[in-house]
Amino acid sequence: MAEPILSIRNVTRDFGEFRAVDDVSIDIQTGTITGLIGPNGAGKTTLFNVLTGMLPPTSGTVHLDGQDVTRFRPDALFAMGLGRTFQIPRPFAKMSVLENVMLAPLAQSGERLWGPFFQSGKMRDQEAAIRRRAMEVLDFVTLAPLADNAAGQISGGQMKLLELARILMGDPKLILLDEPAAGVNPTLTKTLIEKIEELNRDGKTFVIIEHDMDFVMQHCDPVIALAEGRKVFEGRAEEAQSNTVLLDAYLGAQVE
Ligand SMILES: Nc1ncnc2c1ncn2[C@@H]1O[C@H](COP(=O)(O)OP(=O)(O)OP(=O)(O)O)[C@@H](O)[C@H]1O
Image: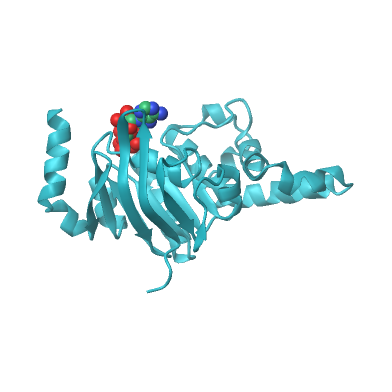
């Protein structure tokens, strides 16, 4: 098998005495849409935060494309092709949808990368190129008609599409989505799924945290489950549904 795009080895993350992620090892294969499931508090978002450099692991390693990126900063990882969205989108509310997208590479790749352009006389050309690219990605995520609207005024589902547009500015090869369908109406969820599948056919790899089991069953393969910080299942979606360890984990979490 080809080298995994992301290799997570024995990752543990403690908050004081509490172990939120416990010795997790996962290989994400290039070209897959992996579903990451598990009851509330299982450690899914914490694992994303470790993978994207927002939190250092207490121990363990993360390799991206074979390179050890453990403790790399989010902007460095974004520049290397790792994009992520958040459970709760947080656009700059007063800025337009287009401006939010135009800011993405500046805010996330850092001045190091873009600084020289802005110091040179090419600034205006550069801004026009960023604007063109931003309109392209807005068009792709179906938000072009809302380009001039304030980002704070669009719906929650549209904000999720806006987040996807922002990370697409970096042309990521690996995209981590945290609950993309949560709180999104069925029409926009359908659009989001179509876009994910189109990007996937184009070669982009996805890891998706999602509670909606229909979504996971239909669109994710493989499925990985965490419970109380540990990996308790890895396999096909159909197998997840009848896995007793996993069912116990969900029932246990409900009882608590
Ligand atoms: N910064 C933090 N400080 C202390 N505890 C934290 C912190 N972040 C997360 N935790 C704890 O770690 C555990 C795992 O949380 P996490 O958000 O990763 O779970 P999750 O699987 O993403 O849950 P959900 O599905 O509800 O989003 C929870 O018990 C949470 O309270």
